[in-house]
Length: 384
Length: 101
Ligand code: SF4
Image (tube, rainbow over all chains, first blue to last red; front, side, top):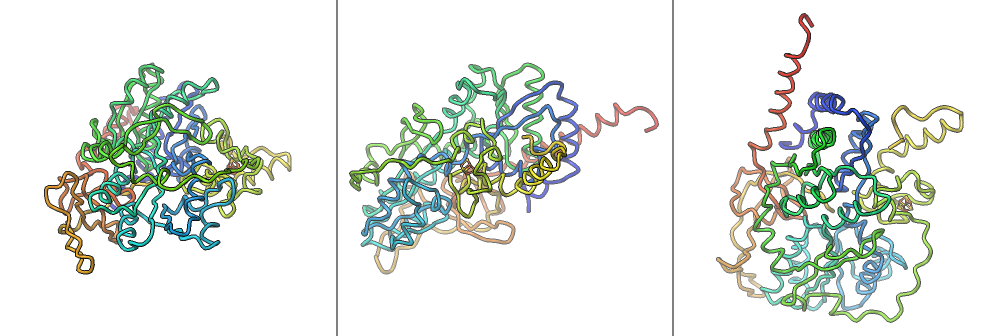
């Protein structure tokens, strides 16, 4: 298919890899921000083709993964109400809260449904006028315009039975939080191409300047990722720290003005808490006053006891900050699998644990078996 | 849920007709945020997509679609640049290659 196949051409990838090898003289650590990029890097084995000096750590860019457990618990509570039809993207259905997940609410008789688009949730509200239709509005800047459009459409039609449980997060404040952490190892970012498609580049210049890190806005196909890595490495080797745009076929410097207009009409910036990173100031979106009557969190009273969170062995918080690799977690592939996930990073298809399970499990097993026989691990593999 | 994929617009759909059962009014033209819809082809699979935020996109244009919502029109000139870079790398490689290899 156009704009996919040609960006997967192995001969072109080999050329970019040669350019990367030619550019590197020292060890460098890069973070790819977006879970979609993590998924592609592992799927196509790009992390293993890179010269040993280049280390990739995986960022927090999966909205399913960073949604904190309190919000999941609130979703479970609302979804269990008899008058509610709870509507969500499929990935959210299996994210564990303190007590079970949305799938379990559904099994217990709750009306929980999966949609592909927030506009499908509005359609459902039109079709079920006697039900309270609640959409679980999660996502980064990429998803916010679509979710804003859904709320706006409901407001315009007077569809008062519709509401949204909002857990929207913003990428630049999370990047700053990662850079500010004392154990930070990230020296350059591959920024998330689709987030920047909506927002543009404006916010990234000050981050690059303040922290002296190169930021290369990068796409999702193998050639995109290799070119982005090459651009970031050249900056590092040359001592530059600039914002560059590898994904210019989709990202304009000013972003998508129409998308930003609807986003800002419906949402305003406020604090948000993130799984693994705690509360970050001005890192999320909330409904503006004019749309607050569509806020499910206000519409449905909060339960009295939330209960103590059971101690979980899941270390997804560390995975999300890029300080722990999934295969270093003791539960990885043992008690935690995509079929029965212990944490959000194993549930979502863009989650780092799921990507490792899908594309690296055999190798991890081989390394473990090899170690048992006193052999070395697979060459160059399993170390990133 | 967070992926965006490229597809080709095959058709722009008219504004919604009034619902014959509820009699609900169609969305007015000239609204601040009109719901513009179209059909997009993803390598043979066709889906209805919201085109409100790519108002200059026409049938035949490629768009990046995320959760049923087009977030950008793909710029064909920019898309070609990585291949121009690769071609330039080849030429450079030939210049640098020693004689006779
Ligand atoms: S492997 Fe499972 S338990 Fe371990 S951090 Fe990942 S999601 Fe949590």
